[in-house]
Image (cartoon, rainbow, N blue to C red; front, top):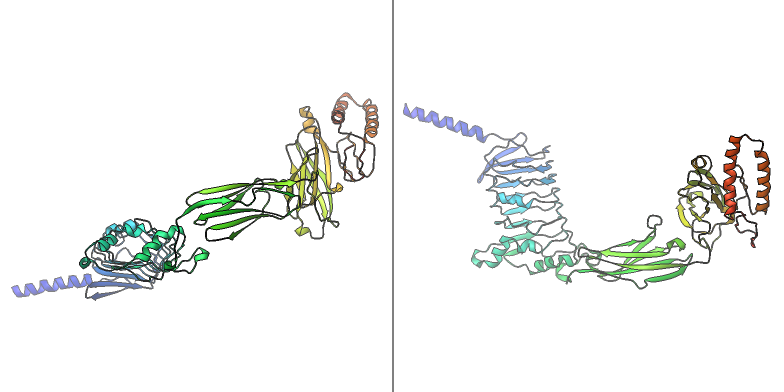
Length: 543
């Protein structure tokens, strides 16, 4: 009886153990190997690692699936796990506590995934880890203390990643490297490093790392000692052992000419030379940067020196000023100022060697606002989709006008903030060409006397070079150089005629008319209405 009872108990225990052992994930295969039980999941539509993996596995392989993340504590219940392979997935994120509870893990392979960074402190939970395979990922940074928790590591593969700059302190601070190079030979074991086929940028920042690689000797072994540079261009393809890199250098900027004077219409190139290690980023700044876009080119003069050229195709008055060349790298920055002066020809506008005889531009004042105007122009050109325009605007007595560049298809421009009782001039011409007489309008703003005047009539327009009729306030007289009229006599005659007419008006109407005439009289007091005494028949003069 006792024997039968013992046999039944043994059978029950065997059935329980067999039922546990037989548990496996759907779509996966489970096998018993010499070292223990193994789980293999291949080409499954997994986006996440299954959370209900049995606890009795020694080896887990989840490969060629669509896993995107190693979350916190996903294997924490499988404390006996020694081999974890997650190759050929889409893993982009590894949680800092993803290896929690894996104190017996000796081999971790995550090759051919999409990891850009590794939470290196996660290896505090894997003190027995000997193999770490991270090749064919997108890792681009290796911090100085990355390996400090990998005390038992004998194989590290970071090949075929995107590392560019690594400090030699990464390995000098690695306790494993220190113990292997300083310990007794009989206690030393080989440590294999695979660092080849990265995007090594062989400038002064990589100097220490290259010196470390060239000095590596057993028990530290490089899987491939023929490591090559990806950049800069002058060193691309060269082997580490062929290089002798210098220490890093803060940028130094200088220029062959810091004071340039050229005539209007010239083609000018402003140069800046920069010496630095590593290569500096060079930027040009000038006061009209938001208005004009010049061409900048760079030429490598030698390994450490770059020539940067700012090219101005057509020089005009607005380009006069200080141009600053600034260079910076991770050590510091430097800059140099270059003064560009433009020789004028006593003209308010830039000169042009080419004349557009087939371009017709008709300019007019299209709209009046409280303190501004809107200028419109009608053009006839051979290539309207390619013709840029320049609007010159400013006070009539100013030697230089502001230049505003208008793209093809534009036909209007608004000016605000005008002063009262001030004569202004606006011209529209083909870009960088001198305007003709018929392409300019001169106007005089009215007096700023009272609120009613600002609402009813604020700006008087006097057209002096356009042979056309504009809608101007009552009481104003339009003069052109084509008619050769005498403005003062005409204005006086107009004044007498309007005074006789005002006698027949009611008091309210008479007051409104008086406002208009007063402003005209104020303009005359400022000597804005003069006789045509121009020596040149086609010059623009205000009568």
